[in-house]
Image (cartoon, rainbow, N blue to C red; front, top):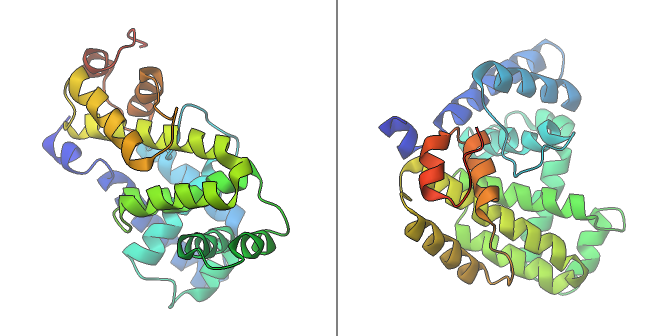
Length: 244
């Protein structure tokens, strides 16, 4: 891996999303854009440039619809396009805008927050929807637009207001820890098994969810698929057999 890759493993993804925004604005000025069309364009750009969406071990069918979150965050916070191109955000990123409103409600923790959240979601909060809400904050944190502590707080607040979703929150915490460890390996910050375990334990302690530490197979999957770290490096750090 080059030193440039180690410094910022998201450079290629961000550049691709910026390029895609140029194409979206071109389409918009020529007659409009639709969410499904942008999803397929995102898939095309990623496949051409061999970029993997943010993901854990599984590859859900709606992965690229979920990955529109990255496009939303880069467009809004990286490029500041949400005011000039308000219609694009309303037409394409309506889910993400609702999820961001929910994040702010939950973080503020005002009276009646549970009811306000449920009203925004049409009466119920499904596990997949909760994961998508968390993905918005996760993406902002990973790309440097929010502080990691805010994601930790969000996880704890959701557990407080929606205790029936503790299992989903615990699973998401496990994913987040695995992702951060994989990222640290990709950056060259974690180079051995001792520092890998220390980072896992430290993250779990800071977030505050019990039984949320991922196994090394989970870390391996993300490091290999998302960050393209070679197996030879991974098997020296992770307690897994070489998987190809």
